[in-house]
Length: 334
Ligand SMILES: *Cc1c(COP(=O)(O)O)cnc(C)c1O
Image (cartoon, rainbow, N blue to C red):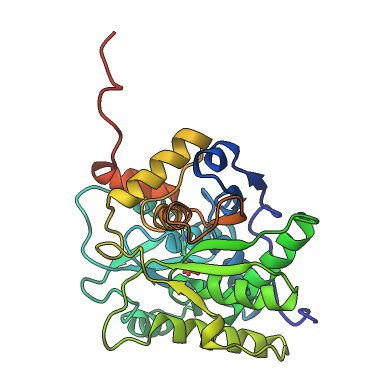
């Protein structure tokens, strides 16, 4: 395959580490490894760094000077986009769902430090206001470029084809039975899936569905399938995709997107206290809760070697401070 026609730039540090989680493995009875995409390095890192290497490379190649993207107030995607834009001397406009909160914390604090323009969009949480902002910036003589929600288009997914290649090179001789990760806007899932096919890796790819399906919206699995097909087409691959092969586990959505429950709290505490590794409350905490539960219930048999892809997100811990279970009785006056 020839990727030469794509203008990929460098924004992060790769390969990200692949590490064995010895104490968590011992506690659960499986051999658990972790791919540390929380360490991509771009303003606290995360999986969006990979996508932005292709997407912002495309923006530069097209001579754009302004970036527009959208997300939730605590969007990791928006924070990494703002950081990359700063580095590349591009203006950055973020359209964030909801109203401006009283306290500026977590990713939102970082967005502000990174110097981007923030537009609060109220109930328009999925980037509905992007076209209007695009036109107004254009009218002011700017050359705007739209980065899709979550960086999930074909270019973003392509970055995860590269990520699978990186994993294959790094894990020589080490065979994983499953790869577990948090799936949301679909680019990570589509790319990992295509990469797994292209590089013939035998693991079962299990996305933990983070968001609740809403009526009237294209089902997530259909969206991921379509994105996978389009990404294959982009690189001239004939890989075909079937619904049956797409594993998107809906069992851990809890009370919905961004609502932290006991499962996320337990997963975050276990991973922190057994490994010294920080998960996030929205994505990786929920995905790890899924992994823990699948091991405990026997859906993943004891002794299996599995890989958890850490997609980042820990900066939002600070914004969720009052929702996190930090344990009682360990704070005391000397
Ligand atoms: C965006 C994000 C995901 C989900 O990736 P998608 O490509 O949007 O499915 C998972 N974890 C974290 C921390 C994220 O920021």
